[in-house]
Length: 213
Image 1 (spheres, rainbow, N blue to C red):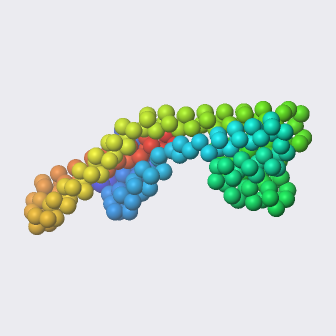
Image 2 (image 1 turned 90 degrees about the vertical axis):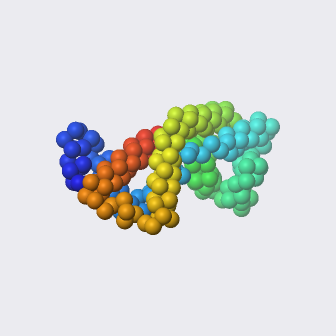
Image 3 (image 1 turned 135 degrees about the vertical axis):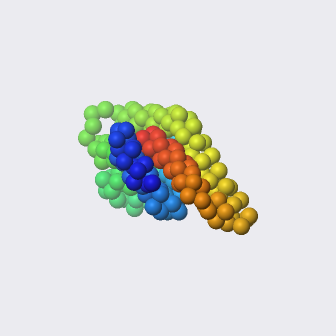
């Protein structure tokens, strides 16, 4: 039955990757449910404004006349980034500080690393550039929020399918197990088709969430 469903899907033009997920779900359902939970967890975008606050703080410190190193140190402390602040206090090269900042604020990591590494070589005010990076970080937060809203129906659908499956199986187990529901060939076929449809719904929901990342 499983191979029949996959063959029908291939004939209908369904993406082979989705069919592969369906086959995985049918072959090893429990690990697949773990994969679903992981995707659900990772599908929720981080909406932290730490990078925005860091860039705004550095810009404000620079405009107040502080050096770049001291500005970065104070700003890092204000957003709970002690690793970056410690490197500044120890007098580490700005390239190393830049690398640490890019890892700490990975949503705008490449931009921060390039800016901090070459701030002294750029003919534009560093404060203005930090404003630009901060605006970019804010835009990314807004986009992540929109993606979260747009993907909410897929998460809700997957949650309902998972909850219904767990509740149904749990209820059957408390009433004597699944054997009464799988005695006849027709019952087994119906159970397999139902499981395939539920898992197909989960696969489609995962695909939507994966593309939304």
